[in-house]
Image (tube, rainbow, N blue to C red; front, top):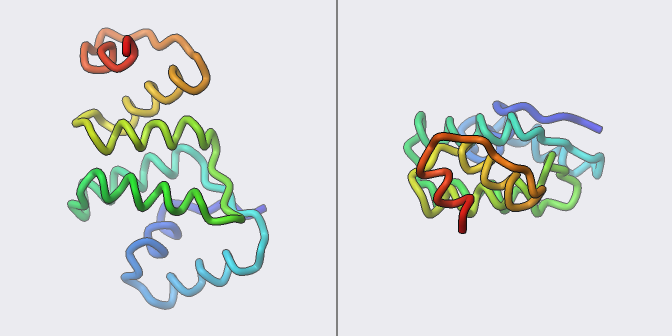
Length: 123
């Protein structure tokens, strides 16, 4: 199993460095399982939003589409996908969306004083 870091996934998404993008694509074509940790997903969302100014719904769709690649395995995939759905339609930080995802998908209790998060937890 290969673990992808943020930079590799960003090169694949942005295609701003053709050589690096091609290397990632070639790795995906090997059929070997490629693992993306939750932390890397969070960093990808942050960079696409804050550095590249990409809209939240576009980020959510892009990362969701990556999760559909047959040999990509995303840690806590159900949590991440739930978080992306919330992220696309709110102003919450992605980490807050992950907390909501953990609550809704894994049935964790989230202890928070944040009123915006509490609103989503109580839905």
